[in-house]
Image 1 (cartoon, rainbow, N blue to C red):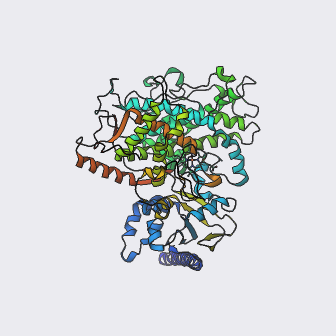
Image 2 (tube, rainbow, N blue to C red):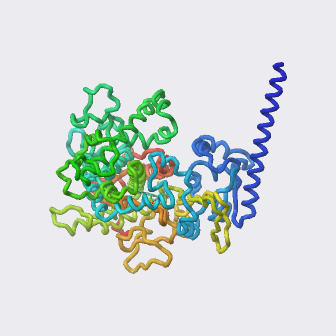
Image 3 (cartoon, rainbow, N blue to C red):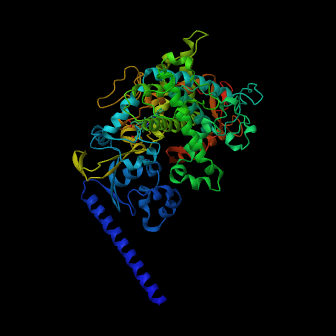
Length: 639
Ligand code: HEM
């Protein structure tokens, strides 16, 4: 009896396996036949086209597959997580001799594009090539928003959110960045006892990204929500970056000021928790998280719920100022709970929330969005979705580009010193009592060149995901029609575009910010676009060849926000200090070269978690100018 049952089960199992294997191969062959008949090259990928699990786990198993004999696992180079970062466009350029190619997989073909003309065509025909929605599912978790929606829905979101990114807001970004950067630099150049460090003996910054995330969040909080959060410490010496009151179960231990006890976690801690553990948060239920053996997981649901409370409070706060008509703090269409009008300000913040300001119009993003939404085009949930997404879109990306640029500067003292020359000129034109102002931003050409070059080599968003949705489409590549079936996913590959020698010679893989700096006789070629219109005589790349902020209708709304923030912070940091790598023995040429090589290697080790971020850390310090340990400048060069 048992034998018969086992035999039957065995037969069923075998039949299922056979059906699966046959189905797998016939689907794969169908995709291959389509790709082979297409005018462009293709690579066969022996797996599903868009498997999330494969993406997540491939950093661990891909190295084994890649080592299989007879190049059996070679296809993994085209499929593993962040593959385009790993090969930087070289692999398809050398193996396939094409900047547009297919990967033919079990469930269909995926188109990879790193040809500027094809990129331009795709973004120009934005209605034919909407975003590939499945790649934005994680960001939909916060509610519908301007990044994840398409078509008429997107236009509705963009109409309300777009106007907030204006010149007045850029001015706010400048002012907030100035205040925050000064406080950050002070904490980098003072000892725990409050005394200024000895020049050349400034504290070592072990975890640069922590501080840069803090400043990115504080600038966002100021310019997006009118929350002016004080810098968390007077000195980085001895500061425990993991500290937060969530550790304490006992309220009496709390260091929170009495009035902000309503929150158990700081705004920054909530944000860090969510950004660091985003995939756990959206992938696991609250119950699983709360019963996890790991503390960081157990506290995630609480961090998320506090985060949402902060957002709710900020919205109510802004509503009270914008629409004070009925005295209740609620606009006509505000359906939120009246109880919530007891606004708690985020911990440590000197929020603007006071009703004294009700007569003053605020220019922060949130207030402008609420004003633009007077006719209720967006629901309360959609407003929350957009606020969350602005935080997510503007936090990690800005911190990451600052981190990379500062480390690159530490490896290139010559360029760093040339930025300082530019800053000296800006300061020389000022009276002693004057400070930097937003009018100085267009004069920061070299800092902008630094940002553009950093984003060229290390874009935080390495792919833009498009699709043909339910219609077949035809593109043109090398003057040939290229037919695409419905439901084709398309990757616009930034790294490959940004490192293509055709558009970025000389030395496309080398950090050369001077490539952006042109003299006043420079006339941009036709079919090019300026990357920062505020700055004169900067290289205008060919349309579609430079896409760190996306391109076309769906390009980044916060581009100017990020540019102003970046320039202001770097201008403050480099006015009186230089950033240098921490070498074990100061001033010795060989050790410095060794550190430089290690830093560049570390910059290369990256992985996408929302945005592409560095996996390792590079130790740096900000030393007073003149006390640097890097090799002295040979001659004053104009870069
Ligand atoms: C260096 C910093 C930044 C980089 C590299 C960057 C990059 C990008 C990219 C590549 C996209 C297109 C995404 C896609 O189509 O899949 C995008 C969209 C967007 N970004 Fe940024 N971003 C940065 C900073 C910011 C900031 C500071 C904000 C807001 C405060 C912001 C808000 C947005 C929004 C709202 C969109 C969606 C626009 C739309 O689809 O209509 N970004 N960004």
